Length: 208
Image 1 (tube, rainbow, N blue to C red):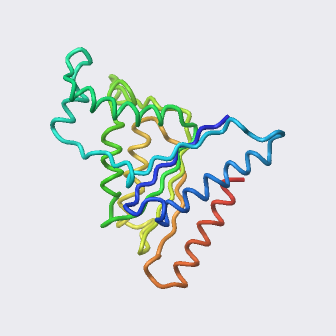
Image 2 (cartoon, rainbow, N blue to C red):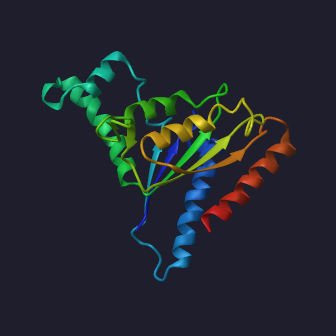
Image 3 (cartoon, rainbow, N blue to C red):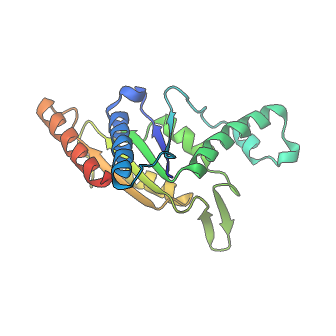
């Protein structure tokens, strides 16, 4: 049994190209698992967290204090903030595979995804401090990131997304991360079609 957590971070929700690629990968992955195992995998589960439909509030001083406060000292408002964070973390803890749809906005990640990251980075829950530095606690998981860009950035200094996302996921213990890029989507119809086709081809390889 496999649990897949799909995180769509585009402002356009499920209609965004990054979300569509993420969805196609999830469907291909589960179809491949069903085809490769007798009787299929009836216990496979997909959790979809759409940050356009279910936005996570941006981190404020009050929310940070709620997440940092000892459980016995939290106010009712702080308990509600922590419950929201706990729900996000529980999805990550359950997941064997994490799939992220990642558009590029102004060279960086969507602010919705940054807010999500801010609420799942919890000391003692998703990472812990040690004498040798922080250690991630969400181990044994595989992540796939479907990065869509209007221009071409992969492998250049202008790609500020890849290392940031890889660094954050590694910080909470997710170190097996695969990136799939669909670039140049704003550079003409032919380039867009070719970029999406290349990404779809890569999806087929990864899912198999």
